[in-house]
Length: 469
Image 1 (cartoon, rainbow, N blue to C red):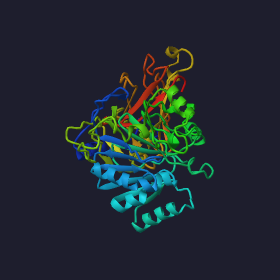
Image 2 (cartoon, one colour):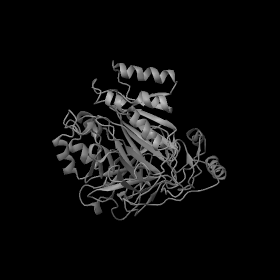
Image 3 (spheres, rainbow, N blue to C red):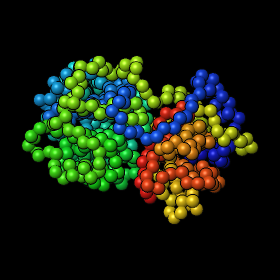
């Protein structure tokens, strides 16, 4: 993390002039608000609607966000029409992102029907070779239609909408053996402080690798892995995700005995509300970025009769602020050529420099060793940049789930593959450390939520942590 080769607080008149010019170009400034963590609220309406389709013993999910459509899997070959009709009922005309979690028939079987009825913007695939004729036909169709094809890899962020964050958590670059389920795409979808985790058929070995990866796994909504098989959803993984809602996609009376008793027992111990497509039909989760609500097809007679399109009604509310304008500049090159005797202000107006999609909360420690009051710097939050651009995070904020003690970042330039740790106490600011200057602890020892926002108040990332985490 550097503003220049000299100090995080030093740059020069040119950089200050650029900031002023950027403000004039932007025509606006943002305000940062603070909100508590998301809660389940059956009255929630909002820009995000996630549908977990009833496609029998298979998987298919639709995400509608404003004018964006994401389809994750498409059920088995006999469910293609079901998926197509569901998309048509929802007013979908184009699919922006088509995710094939892995090349098993119960996940990609219906994709030929979908590709025949809808234009697709791009395809995200697990990329693991398969001799399946169904998968080969799928690849041939993508090539014939000239649809952009992306191979998933842990750490990727998929750009769809500035307010919607899509993070690929699995598979890693070095695949875990050749098992298709273990190398399923695991995707974390985030809007505001609400997170949804889609796990495909990821197995316990994949979950163990995810827990060790250090990437954020916390999610209010979990699409339970592998249809409720006992070979997924370990207790350690469920504890790390800590879902409020768990959704099982499976067929009634299936030949596999899903969901397995062991999985149901682990879910019961973890405590989320459990919904199942075999008993509830299609399930809808709706969110405004702060709270979520759940509606089931069999619990709502008007489920498919509502006017639902990819662009929500004008009355729908959203908590996300308008994204800040992004201006591409060689800030590092400019800063290195500025005299060292000019000090820039500690805070800046909220103007976005660089592509912030790679900025995230990489680690937290909420429970300081010993007495927190005597070891304020024992609690900390680390913010990293895994993207390709340098990002100026001046004016960004970091807060806990209550919104108290909000910290505002000074002139910090996060270079690619760099990070900065924010300590609660006091100290000398340097390239890797910032200090809140507090006289009392901030983070809850029994668990808390760190919320990172940009200068406009848009949530960039959240990370939950337990005692000692």
